[in-house]
Length: 248
Image (cartoon, rainbow, N blue to C red; front, side, top):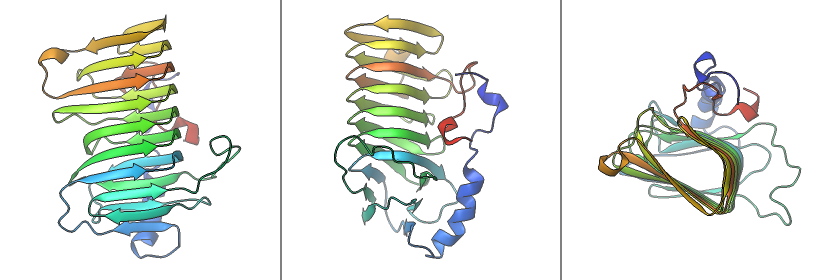
């Protein structure tokens, strides 16, 4: 990672999403999905068969529960109350081998309600700007490659969990927020704020800030081994913007 975050746009895909939003809200195009929020008090975004090359963000101006656009690989999307479920067709062999969408999937969430985000079946190249969201939890299982997440200021304890191994992980939260980071299965090249660890076996348990006494805090766990993990503030030197793999 090179180049300070502050010198680059924090949400460079926002304009593209705004251009596509008008078409989606009018219901034009088979790749546009949306739902009314109604009396929904909380939301859950759930990918059941993995997620690949997706942008997840929050929009305070969004009227509905969510808005989504997808590229050539079209999932099934269902809504039950506040639960938004995205299911891609299963593929044999490797996780979506040699697949390049051309444009990432885009899912935008309403900021008026709290959300949980779950990705089951693996995640690769996920860029999530959740700074404006009231986040309850973020779960990824089945392994993760290149997940890049911008976290909001927590409201109470918030769990961020990755299971099945992970590589090239960037988890960025507001500076000074109390955080516990647990890694199981060994880790190479780990960073927690100013602390750097080249390699460690077994289970690692680190804490930043006044974690033991903080009410609003993050509990981050990565199980199954990890390589190249960064948990820090976004304006730290050496941190690049979320979504850099999108070429933005």
